[in-house]
Image (cartoon, rainbow, N blue to C red; front, side):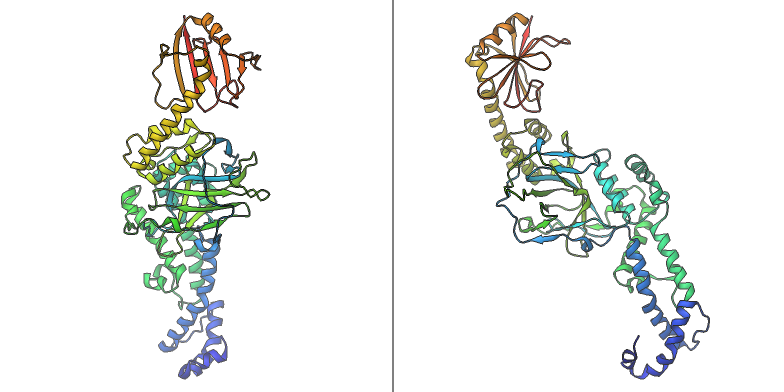
Length: 516
């Protein structure tokens, strides 16, 4: 505090000039020689507040479970490098490392995500424009791992309640029974990290400071809601955490009651086409799009750039880490919820949670990405098609119809060598195909002897695969496999697409089964 500042106080100058050194000494040493005059004491309280607040705020910021979303904001670039965004969906171009972090090859991707609130109060309107930010704070790694591992072991609502509890800095003993169960399953070795409540730690720090002021600064229990609000943004945050803990004690695992405190305003129309791209690093660009709010399915669009070639459509064996669970969607508005993500995608394909069927924009994006790929992943197409069987959205139905047409053409092309050789004709009995199967099957009589004859009919040089199975590689890359009877499986002639290999893959196949 400078003399020039005190001069601006006009008629209070002499009083404050003589009082302030005593006040500072009292505040920071615990001295009891404080002014007793009520007017002077009010002045002392005000300056105690000004002296103490920065120290409390510094402690809060350093120990906050989740840092303000603006702290870790990524740069937003005016234009995506490398031309128009053209996503594909190919299992060969992504994987997960040992830590559960997505690995992507060069190219464009649409990653479906489940979204979670990242504040325990505030609004979550639909179709907000978001940028991306880093998830930071003392509980950030716990929430990140929860988002990586909890779905689909637990429903999103239970994940959200545990996430709120972690964001509020609750100790393990403060969790609801179900949140404790989710934590034990998903984060079994992390309990020691949450043995202390953040709010209790903050309260202890507050009261230590209060004691040194000899009552000029109230203890935590005496501080009113209005007093907390007067401390600024961190005081508001503390009030929000206190209210959440009170609501959790009242409602427990009742998600509808807890989520009712989040204001959902659906009056805003879709505006995601204006969303900018965040530069995660020199090779990774991303943005989050949604027409919904928290606990809805959204999509993260990602471009992995080959800095040498600058061809985003090029798929390479090089896979780069993309840690989506460490990102937040930043609404750039303090009153609106930031969002965090669980990826609805694994090495096995889509993790089909019910919300996908209620989000046509995501279904359309996924179907479009699958069908636009150079090599279509028909397993994923069939999986998604069956999951969306009851969805009436026109665009979804149209894409499924187009996919069925393309799939039948692919089957017809694959079985052409067998038809040309007379192995399959109009009289060959076609098996009933199971829903979601990537195999078109036929039945013939004659057993292993007929299989031998039919295999010989198809032109090509016979080779022997590593497992001893005879194969023929056709000029266009298709592979014809002669599989003997094994483990009650009938002798089978199998035709596989180019670059498939004898053991097959997750794409389509033609199989002719030979009954005895």
